[in-house]
Image 1 (cartoon, rainbow, N blue to C red):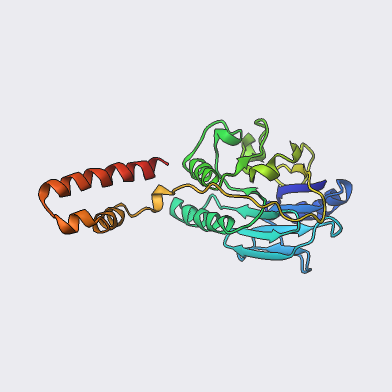
Image 2 (image 1 turned 45 degrees about the horizontal axis):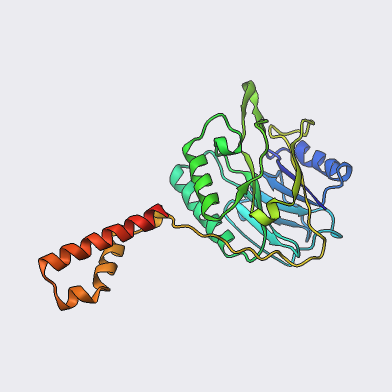
Length: 269
């Protein structure tokens, strides 16, 4: 079993110090971290370019990084058992920036060849992971997860963020590809004090250390928000020989109907 701790440290030095003790007490193998106070300067610490997402290997007997990569708001490592990705998407950035970063994360995950666990503070609310309501960001994340065939591992509706003034919400999410997700046990929101306004999330991954990555065939779906409808329609029409041989109004109308039906099927898939 691989023991995982997921948490947002709120850029608090106390929270980062307490994390070390929690790793020892809980026999944690890998930490998936958001908003770290600082980056550790060792080969077992992997951070994104903005310093807001990190992965820390706490037990080198169970976890070995054989590849890694990062972008704005995310960092990932490839291990012999699975890919692990840490994500942080700021609530202070506009929806266009949020969508751009989410699209980059989606593209990165789509290139992985194996089981994937994605976790972090997405600052997105959805009933799918226990929030009281769904907002625009939550819908965007849920759509991206569906396109990548990722399942939500959050269990129940225990809040993960508890800010000043009794503001509470569920914005820390854990996602995984189905084959890996089915091995995950004991997903829990910890109630212990950790120096942050986010609660720890802990879970265990039931993989044999040193085993080969599970090959996953992703069920990729169309992302209609990126589709250039006019270009697709023009491409369809130009590729139909009937129009080139007989460009009459009736033939053109019949072709347009075929194209429209075909595009509707694509957009609905």
